[in-house]
Length: 396
Image (cartoon, rainbow, N blue to C red; front, side, top):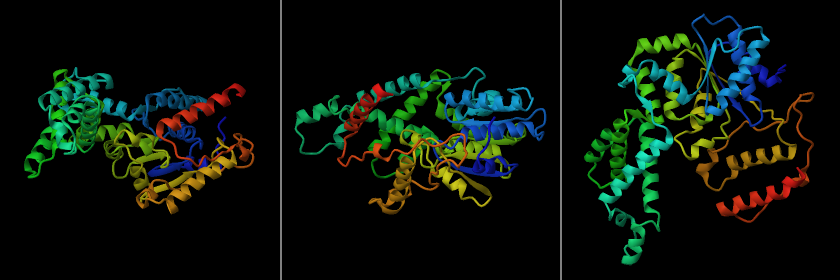
């Protein structure tokens, strides 16, 4: 039986409107959000044709959420798998587009190109561009290089093909997140008087990549998000049907939402809808390699009509580790030598679980924390972690 902590109960007192929850690692946010979903299903506020929509980040979390909600629903004597739907954001976009592909300009039998196939198409486009522009790397090399060094750069010793591929991938993802087509980009470049060689390269690869997708009657995951949003923006009747179907939206891992993802959920929720966003603004893992950013959650929490809550209690770590994590937050906010990075971390600070909590914090062992003052290269840091685990595992 789930017994909520006082701060979890504040979240569970939610009835309607917009609520944002800053949750620290180990605060039980998934359990709390699952319980809230079951609570809404059991409350009688849903019509027979309505569902609570639970949106999470990755496929592995979908089953976890669905099982937890099912368990809480069964505790109330209701049928599991009824009255709620759990989806990743890409799964939700697929539901929206698949139901009415005609509204997105797609055929009924369109298919989603997985990441591996999309990578092959993009690599083909990159290689075709490099073959057509064998000297393009010269624009970015120093003038004092020998011909042999330039030849090395044109080949793989300086990894120019990989660099070109990474540049193209970043441009394509950013363009799609900003809803900029390859034709839009080409038109902008034609209006620009100065040369933009990297943009021109990325734009040409982008156009070729999209042609490859169209040849398969396919869309990639970024297209899916874009098409779902466009469908909602231009078809008010369909949007109203979906708003009726999903009168409550519960979003997990909201710190990893992208611009497109947030716009889809904002459109579905409507200006006065019921939308709960839960996430840890200090744990934005996907920001490194996608267009996700925690600032969307932070800005949401500051909106005047949003009820901002915190889940600060964590039973996962010892007090010394909690103190160290909180010190890192404070130091970053107040003392980081690069001023622009001072906004990278923010409250809430982590607190241990309350007295009597079933998930008590481990006994404190401050002597087990070792601070290493010397700097590491990325490979050196990985090796140090591996060696540390090798020493730790035999006794654990």
